[in-house]
Length: 110
Image (cartoon, rainbow, N blue to C red; front, side, top):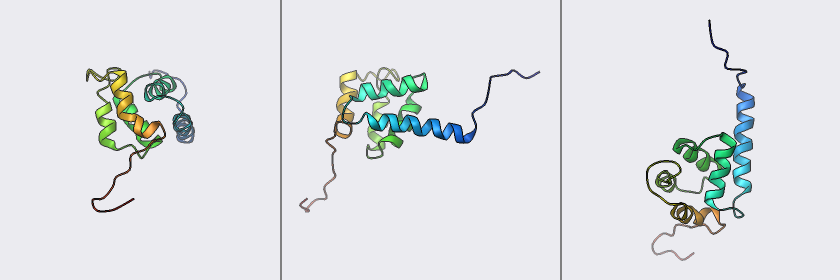
C-alpha cells in the first residue's frame, strides 16, 4: 500500500509557483535588505537552505556573480559558515541596493 502524500503539483503549477517566488524576490530589490529578501524566500519556501538560496537568488538576480552567492552560503542562517547578518548584507548590497558593480577592462574609460 502506498502512502498518500497529498496532491502532486503538475509541472505547470510548479513553474507558476517558481515564477511567483522569483517575481516576489525581484520586487524587493532596492527596498529591502539582503537579509529581508532571504527571509522572504524562506517564508515562501517554508525553509532555509543553501541550495534554495543560491538557486533562487541566481535566477531572480542574474547579475550577482555565482561566487558571491556561494560565499553567502556561509551565512549563519544557512550553514555553520559563520557569516553574520551584517556580512551577508554587505556582500550582496552592491547588487540589491540598486548600486551595482560593473567590471571595467583595464585601459578602458567608462
